[in-house]
Length: 273
Image (cartoon, rainbow, N blue to C red; front, side):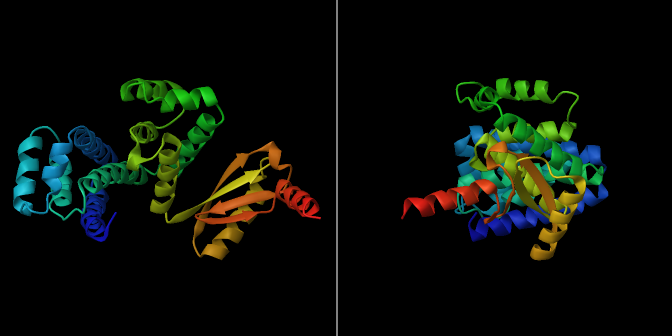
């Protein structure tokens, strides 16, 4: 987002946090659903996106238009948050859509936090991403542009039935809708990071040939936390092809201490002789 859009989103996000602190988790979840339904409407109606983000129209005009469309169709809390969003200045209609999606996702995460489930939701999103990435057939089915969004969402719900919390399923549906204009796996990854960020944690993606023990994971997490000055959420992926050692990615930082990397470096050095 550009600066004006970021500032407009920040105002609405602060309003969301204040609301979520005093609301029941179920009420926050219902508000999140309302906001995400409006995001779906904005994605489907480009003319409405343009009208609600038009800098030539006064803020009162834009919020009046939104209120006229949504009154009686979404809850009062959702409408209040959406009005605060639309009242701001947006650099582009697409950024208003991104802001609405993000606000709905943050509302889901806030509800999970209030219910004491945020850590579990973060892990469920990550594990589902791993399951999808490990199966080309499943990945293709969930990313198929020829399949309707509802068909793909139904498949995801069937896969997660009895295995994930309702908020996790709803977040997966947001990822399937292309959260932030990302691919499905890209959207899932971003959702994991947003969940960790709400817990004031950094995500470390760790690739190993075999799972680390609980103690090894704890020590690695503590070392990374000391490096980054923030608690770190360690997410392990097993890839036997690395042969041994550990590869760690935190944000744009990559620490590759795998046997595979050392073998490749040796092979490249010998090839240059």
